[in-house]
Image 1: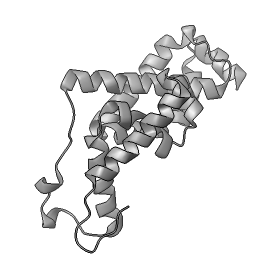
Image 2 (image 1 turned 180 degrees about the horizontal axis):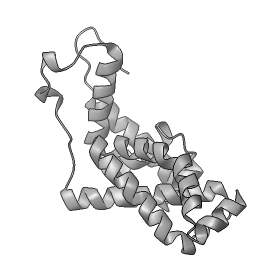
Image 3 (image 1 turned 90 degrees about the horizontal axis):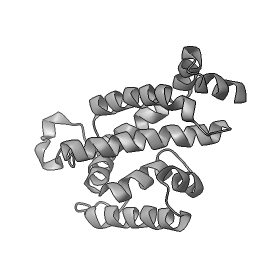
Length: 177
């Protein structure tokens, strides 16, 4: 893997292809969870790897774990920039969806509710929560990516979950998630 990093640092196109093969899907899913938009996630994922290629000569990572953190940091920063640029907050409202547009299977309905709750969180909670709960990063890895103390990251994840619980109001006969 050290050889792969060295080739990436020298802007070898084949090395970039290998890195993309390893991280394109996880980065796309991460960005999709952050933005709630498949199209925007695809665009940001592509932008992420363009930046990876052009910033690679300055990469200080010596192992794939820190390279992964660096790639996620780039993706996170691009998403933040997009949020600021578009003042992007909410993808859709559950009240905008009619009965005919969705099937009420628990899995699908739960996914919609999860997405809506996640998109209603402020960025400062949503980003670390997605990294922890969806991408399974450790608190230490999230702290490194976001350049925040580990205790702050733990607090942000905990508070993000708390906000989601407050926002979730189950209907009659439903239980809390």
